[in-house]
Each structure stands twice: as structure tokens, then as C-alpha cells.
Image (cartoon, rainbow, N blue to C red; front, side):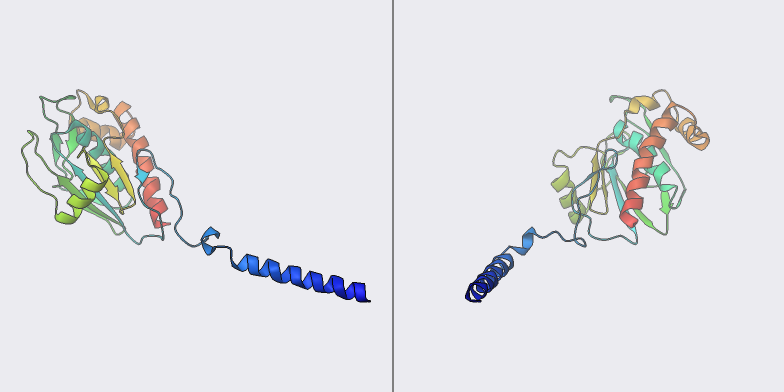
Amino acid sequence: MRIARIIAAVAVIALLVFLVYYEEIPHATQVSMTGPRPQPSFGSFHPVTFHISRSAKVTIVFIGSEACPYCDAESWVIYYALLDYGSWSSIQYVHSYNGDVFPNTPGIDLMNSTYTSPTVVFHGIELYNETWQRISYLNASMNSTFERYDPQESLPFIIVNGEYVEIGSSYSPSYLSNMAADQVMQELSTGKGKAASVIMQQASYVDSMISYLMA
């Protein structure tokens, strides 16, 4: 009986030691299932913060230039992707500077075209016109964000919900060589053509990203 009592006492002591040790384990090592989670990338869009909760509305800011061929190329991706969430009106076309690489690349003026949607808030900012003359400026808050994520001030710069960023175009403006804006629009309306194919592919990533942020 004495041996049994000794064994029982040792077992109790061991249990108490284990409980004390367990309580001292830092809580930071525990994984929260409801907190921020790492985010996936979507095409050329990469996460810059953690995703915490779903968004009732997704905010997209496009910063570009009418003269920039990469901006004009990417404008078609944004235009097509956002068709799933709202509608465009008063669409205005532009083309890149004819003295630059990929001269006269057709694009959409995302600053002066109008977009309405119940779920997506879109802000298009064109910093320069078709001949690289300054036509607009960023407010202090957006300029701070621009400098933080794009210190080289490359264009276009697109930020989505403050969580995803794309710098530059997701495809080469060469796909739009020798095309007029209405030709690109015609291809997108039929879903056929070399330009439409690459634009629709890149737009599908934007669509998936928006759906992810609203899920």
C-alpha cells in the first residue's frame, strides 16, 4: 500500500509540473483560425498586407498616364474585369505618346470615363496627357501610398483595397500594335482575337481577386 501511495504521489507531482510548463508556453505560438491570413497572388497582383475580413465594397485605384503604353495596355484589363461588377459610360479613348516605345498604343482614359457599381469603387487617375504634360496630382494620402509601394514611381500603379498592388502592365503593349481603340473594343465584344485573348486572361485574375476580397 505504501508503494502504491508513493506512485500515486509521484504521478500527481508529474501532472502538476506538466500543467505549470504548459501554462508558460507563449500564446503567440498558438495559431488563430479567425485572425489575419496570408493572401494568394492573382496574376501580376501581389499582396502587401494580410486579409482580415471580407469587404462589402472593393476599392480599386488606378494611377497611370495617357502617354504611357503600359498604362494604356492595362486600362483594357481594368475595363473588362469591372464589367462583371458594374457598367461603364462616357468612355473616352486615348493613345500613348508617338515618340515612346510601343507608339500610339490605344487605351481607355480611366480618369474621364465613368464607372458605376454597387460593389466596386473605382478611381482612375491619369497624371499626364498623351504628350507627357502634367494634368493631375495625387492627394497627400494617395501620394504617400504611391511612394511607399512604388518608390520608383513606375506606371501604371494599381492598388486594390490597400491589400493588393500591381506595378506595370500585366502583358506587353505589343499585343495592341497597329490597332485602334475601336478595334480592341470590337475584339472584346466578340471574345475573339489576339488582343482580346490576353486582355481577358489578365482580367480573369482581377475578377478572382475581387471575388476573394468579397468572400
